[in-house]
Image (cartoon, rainbow, N blue to C red; front, top):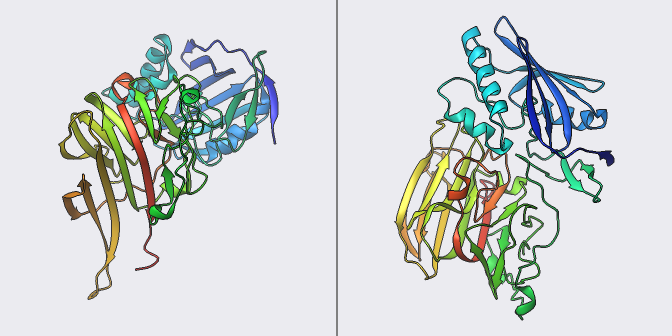
Length: 399
């Protein structure tokens, strides 16, 4: 079900009152007022939207947000209690952070990172009612501009926007597509064992998933990408995003990328399930300088990234990295354990037991960049070419 709403697109944030703490904001055309209160360790936030049409969808989203308990929705208001209790001092610190972020507001995409870098306490997820930021999930709300009048459409199943980033579910067309005549090369016989495949063979449909419907798209504020026949070309300012699906929420998986860096990267994302914030599972195949690395995080064990620095790679030459996390069943005890193998250019570089579980992916994936505008966003671009990206879900079913 869709509803059309008129919106005013000038984002702002204003602190109305400090005690009680109240903020007015207009994020992505959704004017709202958030009021915070504290009582006996419980923080409660009440958000009132000017347009009640969004409340039902927002309410369903917030009830799935693990940061809150006791979510109540009535009229044009959503009220929720923070999941974690706080001391008065911690609440004072939280309000201070909110106030400073609001006053210094430039890009709501950086709000969560600002909180992460602070020395104090609780960091809410980016779907917080108080932030006015919408988290991507299987039931997320998307906003799609439908006319020049500023009218938007709410799409319940659009895997829409996080941190103010919008995109349209349209084919990705290379900026130089008219100059290329390419063979589709769409054979999938060589893709056995994979469930998602981006082959980048067709310049007028670069985001195509050759094995399913996990197509990649380009955000509205990202410059167009280029192509060569059979490869995606990224210039250090662009990349593609992949909406989250259950396909990527797997404890066991294999990911293989054939890539050619044309310049060293700082923390250059090649193919990543990189969440905003520090409290979520994730993994990254990326370039750290001229070294290709695999970073991963099981948030149930640690908020820090574990890093496997594989090897230095040459510029302007093709390389293949393959990461495989897979289950094995002991013939003696019947116990299932997981291993991680990483190879580079056909040579096994790492083989070890893998004790974590990084399957609780909650956000979309990125190809060639950080799709959330986190801190150091401009350092996270990959410069070079990608021949293919292939991903396969590995389960315990056939052990």
